[in-house]
Image (tube, rainbow, N blue to C red; front, side, top):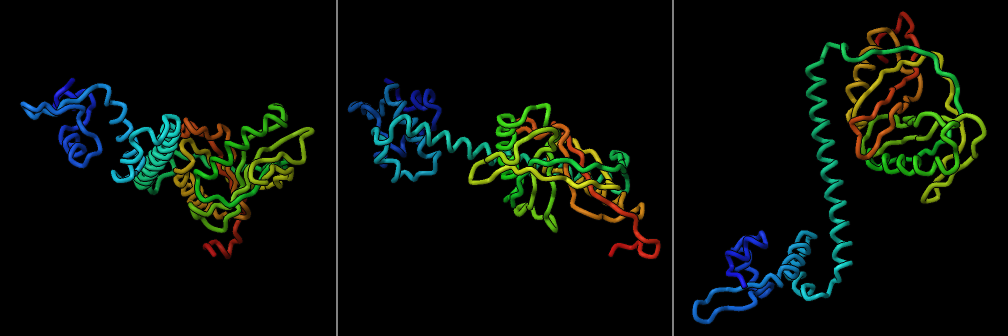
Length: 285
């Protein structure tokens, strides 16, 4: 058996916490030496302590934990609860990392003010293309990625790799709202493809067309899609400086689609239809 200091080391919890749990009757030593008054613990108690600590990490109060300590929650149930909590924490970490990158990219944009050296704006024409897509208002980039991941899993079951092109997002939103994104997402396709591919929640990819655009201003973006504002800003600067104006819905064509584990490796081309402003109306309307 172990004295409280020794047990604290093997359990990796503070002696102060063990004393407190003893005082409230949540986790008591296996034996108290009558002569010395020493609290003595056994390694056999580690599973119970781990269960208490796991339930605490799930957000339960000590009063809620007490009835659950002695096997009221099975090992499988506890594992499932912890797995869910782990996923929630992972999502929070990803969101915090996205915020970190967002701030870092804003700093970079400030440093590049007045310069477009890192951006190569290309004007080109784009042909009409069959488009297998679904339109949905998403509550944020995370929700959009969930739908995109489902689409990328569903497509190969119905469409061969040779008949689909790039993953493409058409931005229908009238203005930018991170938590209210009106997006049409899908794949350009060729040849014989289904008119519809079912997704979850009654949604489906349906066959339509991306219209042709005579004059499309484009810029490539590399990195996490959530930090694309730098590319958009430079494209806007170029359009205004060269006497153009936007003339249709923006698109993002993913040459290297976003992968949950490798978002920084995403490569996309941002596209906006543009037209020349009339000579007498070069100022923004």
